[in-house]
Length: 192
Ligand SMILES: Cc1cc2nc3c(=O)[nH]c(=O)nc-3n(C[C@H](O)[C@H](O)[C@H](O)COP(=O)(O)O)c2cc1C
Image (cartoon, rainbow, N blue to C red; front, side, top):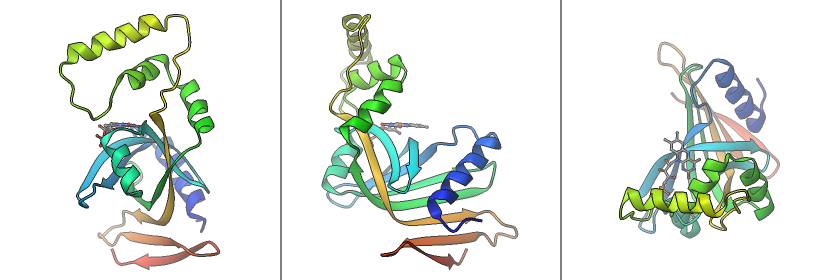
């Protein structure tokens, strides 16, 4: 088993995919508001490498505003098919516009239109208004590309620590914590 937590994360993710986990890229992302009240929501994470864990969203959403004021994030993945959980704690920073553009370009057109029309997390007067706005945008961009709105982008979480949890019987689960140091990662075992 590799002692590099980024490689290990990607290995566990590919094992969950092979095992038939539904939506293996699903994770929970926690932020806090200005009064330190937490909020969590499920997200589809995009990728993880040495630079961090990336997800995409509306930067003016509740999570986006909370991250602008406090960049600390806690994420958790759980794969029931393989009995594994991974927690990632760290700081969020916006991805470069060029990176967001590249991902936007490969998104399905319907997702682009939906992201462009939605003021995510704002109060909506009526669902009909939203559907009408969607159709209007669809018509106005008929035959042309949908440009990425400036408020749709990614956040990259640079981990401070990453914990790998493996289900083990009789409930003596295995917990391995990787803490970032100046030169790399220090590994500790935790009580289950
Ligand atoms: C499985 C799943 C995946 C989701 N993936 C995303 C995502 O990648 N980006 C996103 O903005 N919202 C995603 N959502 C919606 C979020 O859970 C949430 O409703 C939305 O981002 C607004 O959150 P906020 O008000 O805390 O900012 C997903 C929801 C589910 C159930």
